[in-house]
Length: 407
Ligand SMILES: Cc1ncc(COP(=O)(O)O)c(C=O)c1O
Image (cartoon, rainbow, N blue to C red; front, top):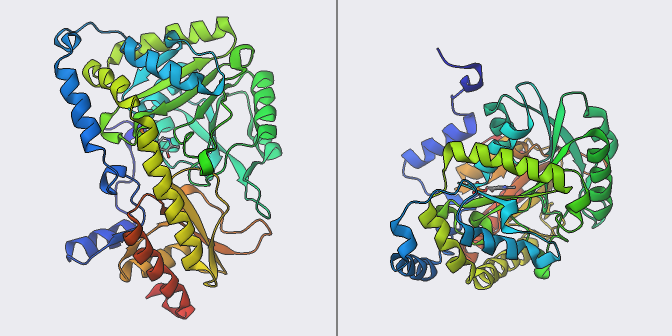
């Protein structure tokens, strides 16, 4: 009765069952996986209320004039935002979407036929496989190599090249990457661009965390210099840029040589026109909320930096340590030795702490030197006191004998 693309195994995993059972029993859970800013005391209620109040005085919201690319004032604001890194971006190069996931879906529809392949990083964003499958596409993973002595994660270019084939259509890049927290190295960018150009692949780069570099570092801007390169789509959105996931406004910037770019835009506009999914009212709130961007991001960066420092401090001498970090909202904790990730996460849950085992993000269970380890991913957005309590419980758990992993 149902399509093969909808034939998922909907049974909850053991881990999900364990979480649900604990919740049903009314037992407390300290959720170190919480990455929704509105649940971490980072909601910007006043900014949102002011923007919505101002909107009610905007005569434009009383008429419906659909624009498939999305509200022009919103696109003008986004174009100025992307121009901050020296790129030339016009509002006409932007298409609004209802969230980044919809942006991926539109691009998969634009770029691939059923059975075609998109190349995604591993470790990476777990949703890619589902988003691609929903459009009938397959994913091929290209490995990211873990940092050695303080450097960043690097693309395994040989392994990537080995997975390219006649059905390859697009290369997905996350910059900075979630959950590794690494920026894409400029040398890797240059190699990926030249492979994409040679093999006729479009590049899709997800820059949702671009403004959350440690110490204010930002992406050099994939768009600067993209005018004479391969077709390049940059994804971002209010969910991370303004820490307002509930706005459900994201965008695609289209770049590349003029002819390919304009044709892609015309076709993308056709797809967007079939849905007209972004509320023009909410899109008009975007310029008002962008005025608060610096202060919103300042608060998030301060939270992330404080939690990051606390994480390193609390884990010192515990046999676990956070991996090097450049940007983003999460941290990877590496636990040395051959503990099972799921057993460790389950035993932590029994002690009231929820963390995400690394396999969810396709993290390898070996470190850069090939030694066995487990990875746990934790959110750095949490309120500092909650975060510290959770990490202290993790540290205490690691001090217990190994046999307790499965208890
Ligand atoms: C790399 C990456 N892209 C996109 C998103 C989600 O964006 P949106 O809320 O706009 O769908 C996330 C969420 O964590 C993410 O990690």
